[in-house]
Amino acid sequence: LPGTFITTLTAKLRSLTELDAEDLQVIESVAVHGKLVPADYRIVGENEKSSQCVVILNGFVYGSKSTPLGRRQILSLHIPGDMPDLQGYHLKTMDHDLTTLTECTLGLIAHESVGRLIERPRIAAGLWRETGIQAAISREWTLNVGQREAIARVAHLLLEINHRLTAAGRAKDGIFDLPLTQGDLADCVGISSVHLNRVLQQLRREKLVSTTRSTYRLLDKKRLEELGQFNTNYLY
Amino acid sequence: LPGTFITTLTAKLRSLTELDAEDLQVIESVAVHGKLVPADYRIVGENEKSSQCVVILNGFVYGSKSTPLGRRQILSLHIPGDMPDLQGYHLKTMDHDLTTLTECTLGLIAHESVGRLIERPRIAAGLWRETGIQAAISREWTLNVGQREAIARVAHLLLEINHRLTAAGRAKDGIFDLPLTQGDLADCVGISSVHLNRVLQQLRREKLVSTTRSTYRLLDKKRLEELGQFNTNYLY
DNA sequence: CGCCGGGTTGATCTTTGTCAAGCTCAGTGG
DNA sequence: CCACTGAGCTTGACAAAGATCAACCCGGCG
Figure 1 (cartoon, rainbow over the protein chains, first blue to last red):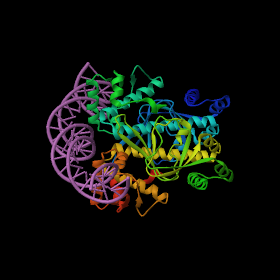
Figure 2 (cartoon, each protein chain N blue to C red):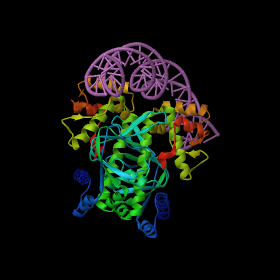
Figure 3 (cartoon, helix red, strand yellow):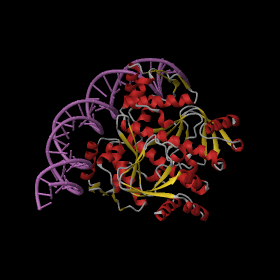
Figure 4 (tube, protein in one colour):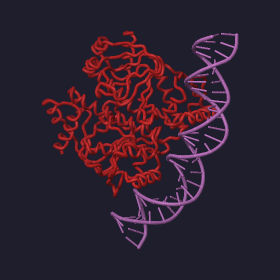
């Protein structure tokens, strides 16, 4: 487990910045607490104190916020390698929930260890970049939810997921496994689950997407990109 | 001008972190390029390279993204003291536009100077906190746009603006000046300007808000907060 | 005086939500 | 091996929210 932690974190950081030998050494010296948690497990909740940072070693996680009336907006999807609550190190208390979608293995880094990591300027830069990219994705989601019609939102979301999973080696040729219910998907794009179902049917009818269980196939990426007004600029 | 820059930036950082004498010295030593720009001026655009960071010394700025079909989502509103493109230091190229709402005086810090600032751990922590808070606000906006009905979105937005302007000493007793057209407001909350107009009328009819020119009065904050499901947790 | 950007209004249309029921299928326990 | 269960998916009927279109108004400004 400490092994996968180190390879996961260094791979992530290397994709964001350069690392020298001493940086690697610091990373290896960091104490991690590995944890296997079930699906649908609340890692940390809104308004809770955050005393450690999570690295997803395996599995899927989502960030969400809910209205006092109980309407949930999914704000972000996180895949292995992501550090979804880096903000917590500086803000200490969470402004949103973090929940597993599947069984996950998490690497937990105490905040004091995070402090030692970011003493290394290269590592700090990498982590800062990571939060910046997450923020850029979040902005695109706001645009998606605020300005596109339902079918375009869904097309856009599927393309983004495909792109990110491909980069992580978990999608190929537009085919990937996505452990989200239609209700979850609906909460990502801000529509009702009934309507999401109909939108999916339309995508299938037009031979843009096919789904069997939880695996998605993007059949015509070209036309999907037009429909979803998708462009990878924001994904860095 | 360098004077207002230093007081603005140190006030901002002090609200986020502790600063020691040496930190202050570094801040004072940073070269700033002051700039007076008109209203509706594009400070930096999506996909452009960012080579300097902006501190708003006076005036209002907004961040936005547009759909290829030309539909604009306003993603953030920035008030004096804010540094709206801090991300640019680490990501180098912008994922959204930054535009003035009013005539503004901006302090521009070259990226290399930002580099010198963040060598100071306290300053780095403060700036990181700043981006974290902006991200938290952005998440709340996504929730707003994705899960609330139009009138609640508007109520929520007005309360947030009131709160932030009050903290900045630019609003008092729920009264503030907001240089946004109804079209701009509509693009903040993802509805059409016609519908925004009707929503505003309803808020006026119910004696929750009154407006004269660009000054807004929140007449019944209690009921507005219920209506907008507003809670200040996310504003730190 | 005339123009123009912004605000306001009414009529109409579209998209999306809600409700309620039925269906499917993997997993469970007898 | 089979009935039962429950979560998630699908469907239809209907209602509501909000978009669009087209005028028109109003006040500031060249």
